[in-house]
Image (cartoon, rainbow over all chains, first blue to last red; front, top):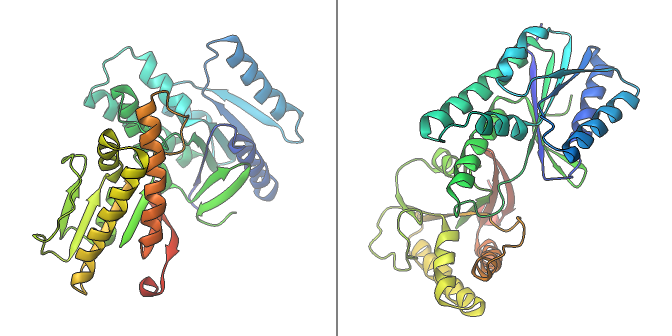
Length: 190
Length: 149
């Protein structure tokens, strides 16, 4: 069997990155078969967030494809065991996962903690990829304004940037979604 | 002149190191806050200027947008004079794109952002080659006859 593949998708707020990722996952399921999985990382912290999650769930339920939802809001690698090589998994999104790791720990953001977080997220993602048929990872474009004024923003940006660079390096395909249009940045579309 | 841009933490520096190697002079605005204009003492073939958005910010602290842009164009011309003095010389300029966020609340940051946008247009217009880096991958958005292989 060919090695499992990793697809990285990013875009700005409301760029259509999630819809594109879902369509791409369904396209892959149609062509290659397999079980669609939604790896939910969100923790509903307020009403708006709850509604947002519900909307995403409804969208997936009302489609023609059967999605299974699996929840894991942090230490993502822990969930790897539930997947096998028939699973097509959509992880949406990396920033939520990173926020959960960084803000739930109530820890000082020193170099050691940030490195540990980076390592935990990267190894978790690769672990899931290795077990799955295809793993699609969605993230946010947040790097286009000055991030130097605030130490917290700077540290956050630096670690997210590292994660994205690592993901693009490991990915078989990468897409940047601009206004609903997916620009193929790496690898050709399956 | 090769202009490299892209968002923060996208691997621009690594890409330049990988593409041009490590030999040469590297001047970083993250280390030295003043905009260098006189390069006569630099004798290496490769000169990399990193973090030009910081130098632009310094300029906008003392001058309005028109004057800042004037100074900037003048600076680019001096850089090019250095590069063109010897055929083997190569100038690489790295600038972070800080122009796609929410409009800054502070007037000085709005001015900085405006000037940076214009400055990058001026720089790209005069550059032989322009690349946008996205998480370590490059997209060449300008390439002139001299640079085509």
